[in-house]
Length: 141
Image (cartoon, rainbow, N blue to C red):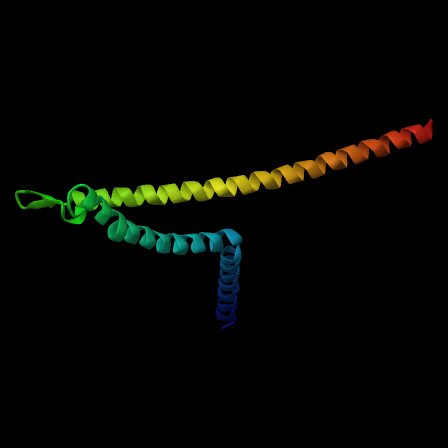
């Protein structure tokens, strides 16, 4: 009977340890940031798909003579190759890639400004420390 209680206690302790480790993992900022990024990215992908399918492709279709890209296909035997849908997906990709490029460029520009401010603060501290050192040298002479 004593051994059975010890086994249950060990199982509960190891289980609570796993739960604590899982809580620590979930509460880290990177995991939450990643989850938010995936959700926002998914919603953004739907917006881009709508822009391509509902706005850009009809305009491009009118420009090239009234073609609807989504219906463009070739039939070979029993297989239907829908190359129009592929063209729309390629345009989707380029729009998403362009938006991500612009966003990353903006973030990098923001980070560079932050680095410059930190560098100026360090330079000011170095100058101040050098002045203090020089004053101490003069005082000790």
